[in-house]
Image 1: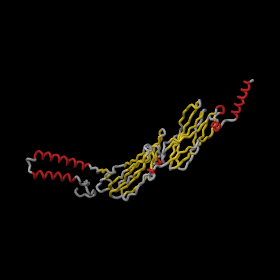
Image 2 (image 1 turned 60 degrees about the vertical axis):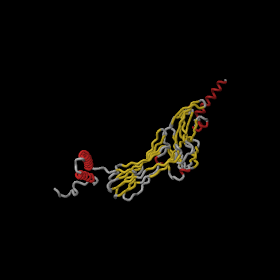
Image 3 (image 1 turned 120 degrees about the vertical axis):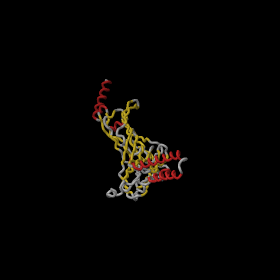
Image 4 (image 1 turned 90 degrees about the vertical axis):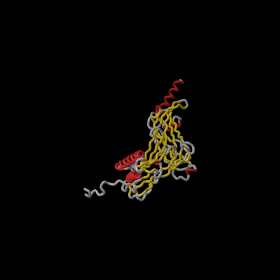
Amino acid sequence: MLCWCCGLLALMASRTYAASPLTVTELQQAGRLEVTSTILAADNIVPHQKLRLVLEVATDRWFTGGTRIVIPEVPGLVILQTEQFASNASETRRGQSWVVQRWSLDVYPQREGEFTIPPVRLRLQVNAGEAGDITGELTSPPARFRAQAPADLEQTGQWVAAPAFSVSQRFDRDLAGLTVGDAFSRDIVFEASNVMAMMLPDFEVQETPGLAVYQAPPELEDSNNRGETQARRSQRVNYVAEAEGRYILPGGEFAWWDTGTKRLRWLSLPDTEIVVGLGGVAATGTELVMPRLTKEQRLQLLGGLALLAGALWLAWWLLPRLPLTWLRSELLRVWRLLADLRKPALPDRLNPGSNAGE
């Protein structure tokens, strides 16, 4: 009789279970589906520094569909989902096997203050046994943190908060021997880790009388490798020389809050000096770049050095036997030959359209 009653109760319970499918909320209330949120960050968070919000969804059943996350908008925060897939794991909880999904969101505070990340909506699908697959929406608990700028950053205006940061520049041609009408390009590249490219500084280009300046839109590039974000911002500035003279292409200084050492550092991009005309000598940064010799000038230079070496050798052998007047005249001839090399090379014909001399 007792066995018959137990069987009847089990049958009635199964029919009730099938007639009233569970929802994800009921699974959560029954302790068979859990959602947590955790802020992963070091102490002393500063504005613009990356921190990570980890959302964890776990069940003693199993997931049968993709999970979708709806990211809330929070004033003063940039929240991004840079990883499109969750990390999956299994673990034992209360003596049972659970399936765990972990989702990671990147959070960047843009100012100082206390922040609360409101509940994040997660739409998921879970197998509920005899009830089959059920789809529903849950929310994570709110997460709180504080961002504060140390005294060193209060007067800097803009800074990059990252474990690594660099700035460099390069030119598309040799700046030696520029003349009026020549064009060249300057590329300024910022690179940093654990930030987004849109958060890297903008290089301000100054107008320079005598140089036409054309600035191209910046190129932004973000990449992600196992949770490590790499950012690159490249700016190209095109110049055209409109007048002779010496010009300075200004560099700049950029504030960097090193999140590894927790201190302020500065990166410098040096000024670049160029010369248009005026003999064709150009300076890049603080290092002068001498003009390149033509083929004819190189041959003349080699010939002059050979003559000088020969004259010195003859002088060593014949000095006791030759009058000083002859030696002085030979040395003077070599000196004049070397002096001619300092003059700019001229074309074979100053007036190509003339028939004079033919």
